[in-house]
Length: 297
Image (cartoon, rainbow, N blue to C red; front, side):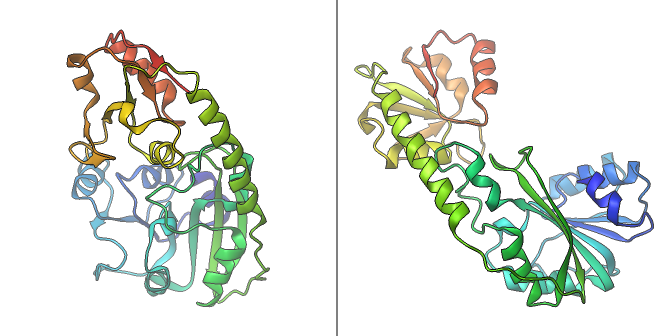
């Protein structure tokens, strides 16, 4: 991210990172010589950390929250933001109000055109993502606000999902060519998911479920396993997840529990239902010294 910005944005630019989390990107930009840096972040914990621990200038707030910012900016960063927003048009219009007359917007979103380069069980349809973008659909959105494309590239290393991410830089009062999008990348991805889903169902048929089993992870993949009827739902005797927002909620009739509770449950097999975190969870199981049989895909 910082490397891309450094190629196209002057070091004296006034920068605002919207949804800056704890300020990691801002801190990296500061190391690269940028000094006029600010952030906007909804989490008070992240704001306090960025300001007190990193010495950054971060305001609490977010898009659509009537923010009172002290200045306008030459560059606004939207890293992993647009795919989460319900009111896209209102937010783009708001971002434009924060920009100087020749301001730029740096956007990172999962790249729809890269979805089909990965094999998974519909993992790109995270419940947290409600918009899906290619560079053409972004161009169509921004063209409505007289904002045009300057530069773009795809980073095939995943850090917000299984697919790579589209890095793009946009400028006010610049026109970009808006090409007609096709649904072919999405159709190819769905076809791959279907093939992989059939493999998963076949793999599940090899597991001995007569006594039941536990599921570790209550995310998108687990939801798809249930919806595809990969196993008899009654055989899932417990669902475990360390995500604090999940614990205590119910998933297909099972109350989600913290994995530490596995230490005090009957020793049934554990199915790791995460394509991202499979290796990490395996290490956690070893560290917890759990003796359960472990199933993976």
